[in-house]
Amino acid sequence: MEKIIIQGRKKISGKVNIAGAKNAALPLMAASLLVDGWNTFSNVPVLRDIRTARLLLEHLGVEVKNGKEIQINAKGLHSYTAPYELVKTMRASILVLGPLLARLKQVKVSLPGGCAIGARPVDQHLKGFELMGVKIEIEHGYIKAKTRGLKGAKIYFDVSTVTGTENLMMAASLAKGTTILHNAAQEPEVVELAQVLNKMGAQIDGAGSEVITIEGVSALKPVTHEIMPDRIEAGTFLVAGALAGGTVEVAPSIPSHLAALLQKLEEANVKLETKENSITVKGGGSLKGANVTTLPFPGFPTDMQAQFMVLLSLSEGMSAITETVFENRFIHVSELQRMGADIEIKGNTAIVRGVKHLSGATVMASDLRASASLILAGLAARGTTEVTRIYHIDRGYEAIEEKLRGLGAELERVKDS
Ligand code: EPZ
Picture 1: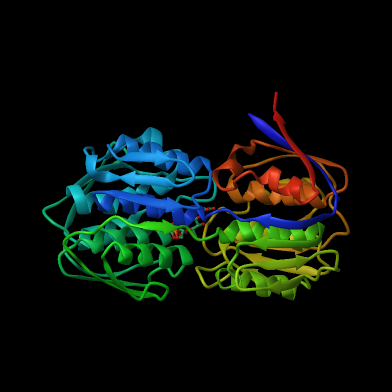
Picture 2: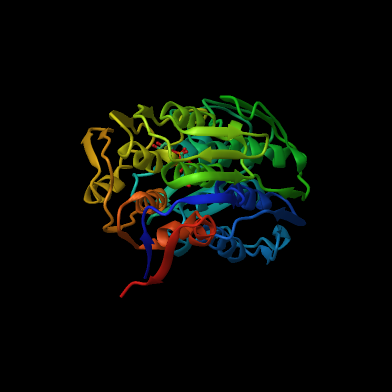
């Protein structure tokens, strides 16, 4: 195991390069299963989850070439089983369900199971596939699904689901007839997937709105695509700049992908400057409390909740953070309290009273975004902070300590006895 040791209160300044979006790369790698021939993706982030996705594709018989770009060819697709050993390490493996049903008409995928932040059910994915003519059995922890051929359907999601929307959009691309997804997720990653599927020859309308219409086609063709920048990595560095900054430029980053976060940062008295492909934050001002409710896009992103809580912990006055997307996404609170944060949890709301400073401590990461919040707290705290179980952060942040050191932060990764 490894940990990151941070010396707090070092001012950070400069320009930080944002990697490709993890939550865009993962569905796009799954979409490669839909076509025979070489798909080429550039700007793919170097992350544990991307390596896991590659292992899963190779397990299915898909050829993957890694380099500056990732090239994927599903011509050799021969297996329809996604084993528990791989799926349990990355829930997004569920995204192979739709493409495998479209290509092989059957699939056996381990149920992803829950994770630290919640039960993470996939009932909406399965409901959609059943409406498209798929017979589904759950047996020994596996989803076994078969179809004589996917057919278009009207699907009303009971809840907005990002990978549910993506899974069904991919399956519907090769189904017979028209599929309409109501209450669809509107995240930028969903829009990017629809754009790439249309480049492949799919006929998808409405991505980015809550109603997506897909006209099934008989076949798709391979494409080349550059993955968009990771909006959550960008948001995380904006909070870092607000907490410990001089002036930090975050690029490439697309302001419209983070509009709700940017507005909340400004409400908290954070100074921002936006350009077409970059956002600059000027730290050092006095922070003001603000109330936040996480919502599906275009609302405030749940993946920024833990990071923003650190900022509010050091903001003047009282703030309320309500988490409406996941049922257990306050695990970072107890660790922040150990660093001196004044936070009280009432149901799915955390009441945060600003304090003058946090103090460094040894804390434990529990999930991807919680680990980011603990690193941010360490940057702002007085003294030394040790963040253990740092493997969580490697799932979603490429070279985070190098990037922070490049801005002037003092931190290092060491073995944890
Ligand atoms: C995606 O997860 C992201 N992961 C998550 O990012 C992100 O937090 C989440 O969307 C919300 O924005 C990827 O894109 C790979 P959901 P996903 O289905 O699709 C409930 C990160 O940090 N739900 O939109 O799994 C579910 O329990 C990760 O990068 C059902 O009830 O999330 C949750 O309460 C963490 N039934 C809500 O919907 C279903 O069938 C939103 O989940 C599906 C979901």
